[in-house]
Length: 142
Image (cartoon, rainbow, N blue to C red):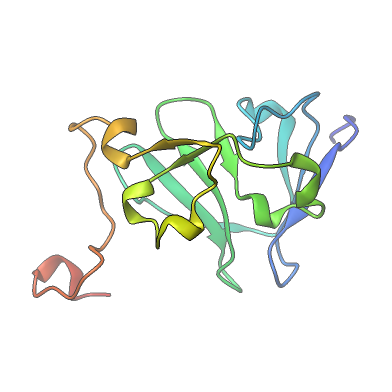
């Protein structure tokens, strides 16, 4: 049983998944770098191995994206919108994947901007479907 006091709580849209964080501080909007302070408190999560680097965690019942979990480091990044009180974290300090941004209007102007290529190495293999129709046989089972 966890005896730590939850400082932050959240969950999915349907309520099937809940979590708590008892970390003493939150660095920017990357919520927790140590899994010992993060705990799923209700429900069973589902995941998708989106690349050779990470998996995406979501609620199997409603599909709410919940977190990104590194395969190489003991870190989990929790999606800001899943917190019960997301406004308590303020503005993002960094944003990544800006090459996929819908337009300048969607960027946080005073946050660091990084493309995916700047963030990851060529050795990472993506398992995500490309953002376009394809006849590639790998995607026909979906």
